[in-house]
Image (cartoon, rainbow, N blue to C red; front, side, top):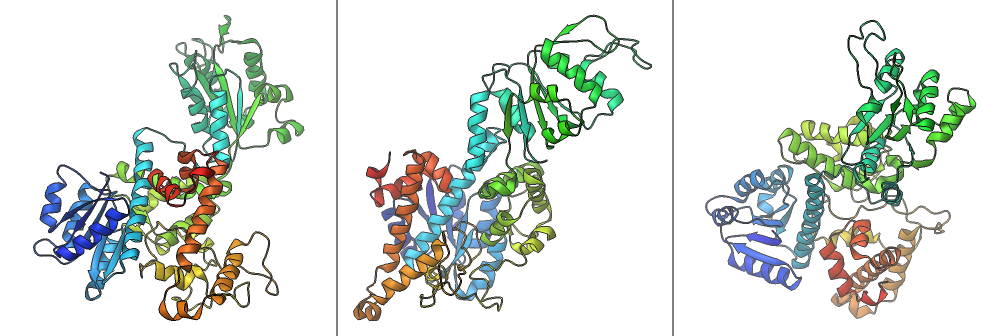
Length: 530
């Protein structure tokens, strides 16, 4: 499962790729035909598949189709001559991770395969969370704080008040608190107080005796009784009617309640977790919520951040929901292009995580191809990103790029140089880091915190200092030096932030554990951990 498979009838292509990938630490297995590859697939599977498009017998497109039917989440890269470009584009739209034009630049080919490997690691991590039944995902600092709070609160019986906008996952937090508590073997009972008519809510909460009111033909247990020994989650507590607020306060104070129409007190051994999207302090000031009940509930308050405050989690959540939707609906998981993922991350998500989940369901059913581009996104996301110009796409659309912040800077290193480094790989499959728009300054000044403009200035300085022979003979190592400095700074800073915890650092950066270990060794960062 950790190998890269190469399929090509040309032995020289197989040999060159196998040697280059092996030097980079990858395990490689090579096949001369699609039939051999499919035969091996019965016993094993690769992390990444790289296949030529034209081969004797079954073609690369046929291999792609059969391979994806068995391993839908595994990235496939199609190698193609320029004369087959239309077929390659069709393959790309049909589920290929990307295509590699022949003849290719070897370092660019290895870098593309590395991106596919890292994407496969991310997909495997997301699939593992689904297999383990993990519904709460998040690498953003705000969510890490929530996870730490759940860990601290889970072993306590203290009442918790969860606040946050609709769709942020308040019930998931309540379930996590219950799941990791000593009460986990007992029931978790949820009740949305805003969804029950007020004349039935009292009976729902506390139950009723037979004959307590018209239609009460038998004794009925309420939610408190159903949750005995476990956890009772009261959602939208801010909408609870005033008379029931009094009864709830009595239960929280005395640990006892009466069924409707009953005369015998019932003991309540229940942990109460309440949630609301409203500002309860304002409700108290308006006389709509009892102040004493508010203080009873507000022992520990846990705020869930809206999705717009944790936009870095959108790619992780989107992959999770796309994979879950594909499993639920019996199809192949859709994959977002880099541009589509940037558009999703930039969207404000007023409905929060619930809206993102519904959008991924919509894409699973409605997107026309396996690879989802910006044009395939729902209208509200496209319209919200209509004014955003993606670097590298502006020229293709005939849009003039804004001037750089530094007047004498060289061409944007995220433009021509980055494209050259990728070896003419099209801006399609999601996997590389999103580019930022060129920095805008005033009168050529760099704005505080605008690292991209500072990078332009540094590149311009180093280009101006290059000896003439390097410019003429191509002996410069500027790109390698800048890349190493960038990676060393980013990874080193993250390791300090995580106090040397590599797995935590990899999760924060969105890269694989093997990748960060290799880069720490290559960049000699071992001494900086701690």
